[in-house]
Amino acid sequence: MEVFTTDILVIGSGLAGVVAALEAEPSGLQTLLLGKFAIGVGTNSSIANGGFTAANSRFSKEHHLRITLETGRGLNRTPLVKKMVEHGSEAMERLRSHGVELVESGIGYWVDPSEGSSELPGILLMKALVERVKNRAIRLLPGFVVFDLVVEGGEVRGAFGFSRDGKPCLIQSKAVILAAGGAGGIYRRNDNQRSILGDGYTLALRAGLSLHDLEFVQFYPVVLAEPRLSTFMIYPPYPKEVRLFNEKGEDLLDRLGICEDLNRAMMNQRDLFSLALYEASQKGDVYLDLRGVPEKAWEQYPLNFLKKSKFPFRKRPFLIAPAVHFFMGGIEIDDQGKTALPGLLAAGEVVWGIHGANRLGGNALTECAVFGILAGRSAVEYATTKREREGDGANLPPEEAVKKWERRANDYLRKRRGVFDRPWDLLRELKDLTWRYAGPVREEGSLNEGLHLLAALEKRIERVYPATLKDLFKKRDLENMALLLQLILKGSLLRQESRGAFYRKDFPDQDDLHWQKSSCYRLSHGEIEITHQPRAT
Image (cartoon, rainbow, N blue to C red):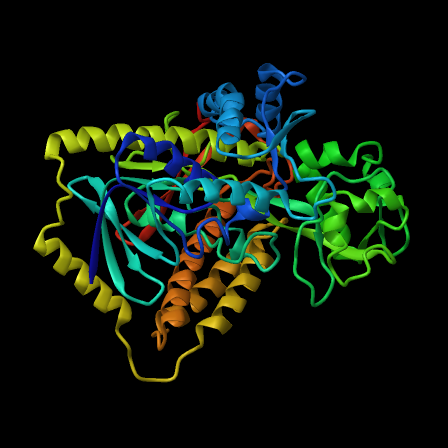
């Protein structure tokens, strides 16, 4: 087994992780940045639309704070929102200093594509940042899959996992930043990267931390639903000539009362819009029609991105339906990015509290930038203090600790004889189950049925013994996905109301008297415990 040592370990190479590494590196501390694939690739940041909601000359901090809290429907953690709002403009300048081209917009900033460019703004964002990372003294470890956080003596001391060639590795670190993204990929219909399967949540949970509000999953309304085509978001802004109608030809924008401003509805009424479109799609096909859009608009982003496809987007209406987009729940941090586990920081979608029950459009990237910077600074502070206490040397972990993780590696790699389900088949079944029972509309009967079916599926996952390295990684994905789905289903069953992106058909109203509180999930002796806390402050 290989053993690495570093001062600061960053898990996840999207916007939050890369910014955190860039913030930590000038301290002179050894910084290691790892990702499941190539650094910056396979992350949601790389397919983002490039919008940051943040104060500018036309948009005040007071307005940003107000609409974020309004959109969150009473479940935001106000101190975290205030921190993001207060430091938003500073974070934009930090990104510019790293080579990101940003232009001011109505309520924030956009990654500026060159004239006529059809590249996604997220690609431009991550290209600039990864180029900056490569020119710094930051060690990169692509293709590394983390299986466990190393926790000893009540603090995090690194991580254990496997490199791309299947070699088990123990990484010892003085501080760890968890920036592993969300979990949209556990659903059959999602607009996330396929690698976004909730790794960060399950790493934290198994390390003894609690998770919060995982039942709140945001759906994006306008996602391609054509057979045999990938489910990807139809990116805004939308021209005024766009039409949305059902199979009867009825104008849905008019019926939903948002024909005047589709883009605004997409920003701060995404929950209501997604629910309305989902219910319409359950009754029949829903189509988006771009045929009336002027020729000139097709030469500009985002429509020129669609021109790269062989599908005739300009010639006929096409099927759309909502898909999973973002997780509002996650790990609790303070306003400096610190978790309850000493030495562990967190940033990005893996974090809970900023978005409440429904995320305001543009706040995801702003959150990544602001709290990535803060987590990087906090990691430097923690690692520096620890180095002063323990000495400068890059001390290897004790021999008994290495042997412990060698035994763990052998357990993961152990093969058994017999005929078992293939992990790829189980993956499809689990994604289907998640979409069917933890989708936009939930109710008691289907939630209980989903838990029953999941229990049977978990037994089959236990009987998967990896024959290849890909099987090993896929089994861990299945274990993570099944654990997360169990949390979502049980949390959804307990929350007897509808709020923001969470909708219970049998409890359709928001109930502030009884349910203006957050769900708290913990693992205790392998069993899930769920409690509810008064409104977060």
